[in-house]
Image 1 (cartoon, helix red, strand yellow):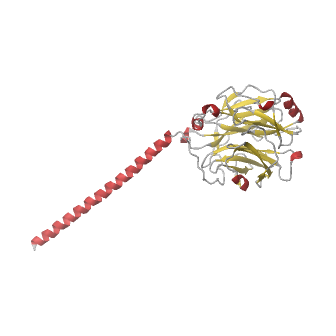
Image 2: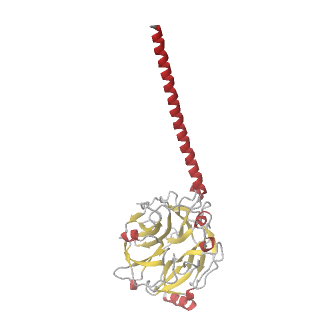
Image 3: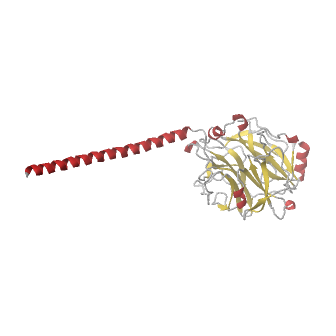
Amino acid sequence: MKKNKLFIVLCLLLTFAALSACAGKESTKEDAKQETQVNTGNTSEDKETKATEIPVPTDTPAPTETPVPTDTPTPTGKPTPTPIVDNNVYEYYLMAYFTGNVESVSFATSENGYTWDVLNNKKPVLESNVGTTGVRDPFVLRSPDGKKFYILGTDLAINISKDWGACQTSGSKAIVVWESDDLVNWSEPRLCEVGAETAGCVWAPEATYLPEYGQYVVYWASRTSDDNYSKQRIWYCFTEDFTSFSDAQIWIDYPVDIIDTTVIKEGDYYYRFSKYEGKSTVILERSKEFFGEWEMLNSDYLESQGGVEGPFCFKLLDKDKTETANYVLLLDHYGGAGYYISDCLDLAGATITAKSGYSMPRPKPRHGSVIWLTKEEYERLEEKY
């Protein structure tokens, strides 16, 4: 009887030992699995850090609203509200742009906003000899009193570097600036560093005069090393004279890249078009305050226009308005013929339609801008170029 009891106890002890050994093996397997996952994650992260190409998502939905900047906008000095007083009478249009193969500034004029004539025998009007010596995305603007002109441009010569990845992580932090009193006599180009210290590029600068500040707000797209150049955001700063600038701050931060933002004021609202890389299309938003909350405006037409960038919208003069257009929207089909025209009847309703029967500058006009001209300014340009 005692032998039977001892035998049973021995069996129980052996069973317990076997179960403990199995549990130990399973625990070891699980620990190894977790360690492998951690190591794999680190390896992947290291590879992403060393990558030279920056992937662009293709199916991310467009955002529904824009976050309001967390930092208070900081002008270069004490804000001095200044009303916009421009007594000029406008009759014509001027387009500043670059072409696919020439990274310089070209001019074209128009009598109606649809038929464009290239100036200077189709040669550039302005060339950069500073920074990279290339200039893209020229933005021409008139001062609020209508008496002075500036051109801002991207300091980028991709036709020389040939490396889009490096241009976004180790490119220029500056913009190229020209100024003029008459549109035909221009200053020498100057480099103005506006980007953050960690910026890898400063692309497609534009500016809007804000009467409540008495200054211009300049905005552009940048990647930064702060997040390993993960995406393009829209940054901004203030200036009174395009010589000195306030520190750069983030204005638009979306889930994926946002570039080429342009703004037009109409009535009580600011309207802004931007290229949203989540869908490789252009989006339209509006806000009553430049640094307020922005509302997304739905447009079936914009949704249908893929492979475009560099939007620019300008208001037609009263004499040139039609039943389908109070504004003209330019979209840059960068893989095709460059800029093409769409009609816009109503910004608030995002009423945008296809347009035919127009004539664009040739060869291949790319991302640029348009301002109105007086008769005197138009004749002066025609005579000079």
